[in-house]
Amino acid sequence: MTAPKELRVSKDRKLLSVTFPNHHPFELPAELLRVASPSAEVQGHAPDQRVTVPGKRNVAILKIEPVGNYAVRITFDDFHDTGIFTWNYLHTLGHEKDERWSAYLAELAEKGLSRDR
Image (tube, rainbow, N blue to C red):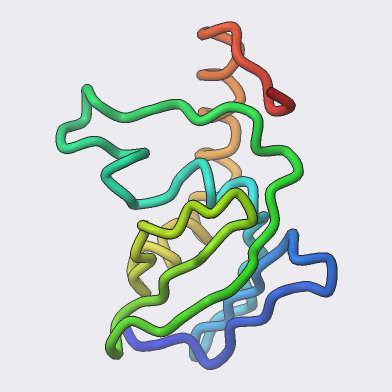
C-alpha cells in the first residue's frame, strides 16, 4: 500500500481524513481509531486477548507522527500512543469502518459497557 496523499485532522480533533491516491477520502472518527488501535494494549498478543475499550466517545487526536515511510503513530488526548497505524491498516479501517463500528457497539452492549465510561 502506498502512503496517503493527505492526512488531515479536523479542527475539533475528532476526525481523521485519510486520502489515498485514486481513492475518495476516508473519514475515520477518533473514537474508532482509539478503540481499534493496533497496539498490544488493545489487540493483545493473540485474538482472544483483544480488549473492548469503553468510555472513548469524546476522545480526540492530539498529534500524528510519521513512522518511517509505512505508518503513523497517533497520540490521543487520553495519552494512548502505542498504536502504529500502517497505511494498510488505515486503508482497511476506511473500507471496513461501518462493519467495525457496528461490531464495536455490539461488543459494548454484550459486555455491559458504555461509550461514555
